[in-house]
Length: 142
Image (cartoon, rainbow, N blue to C red):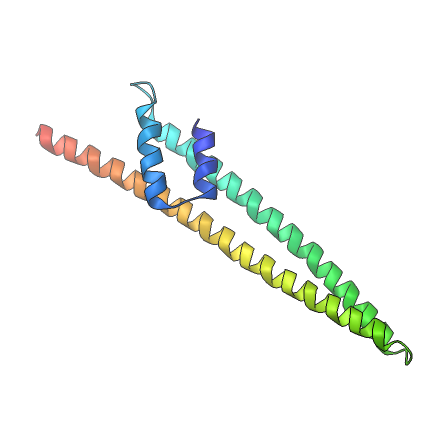
């Protein structure tokens, strides 16, 4: 369950969503569960999921850049031939589409990185709440 929670956190690190899910997750655990160990598993799985997502987007970006470079080379070759304006227009159109795809992938990469940052911030906030709660309990016992 901790791994599933980490995956959900990686894909949707909205704080209100995670806070409610975390409370429910903890409520379902056996009474003497090591919460810090569970949090470490959640953090590890969230990081692993985010890393996989980012790697996938980077790979797709590299492939898109290779296709774009091949199209640029082909277009340069076609432009040297005087009797192929239609082919040049088609290649320019394809190059434009490939450029748009590269921009979309860059945006996806930025969003994935932002999700990763937010997931780690959320886990940090949960740790802070746990620490504050423990401190308040200790203070009340004094």
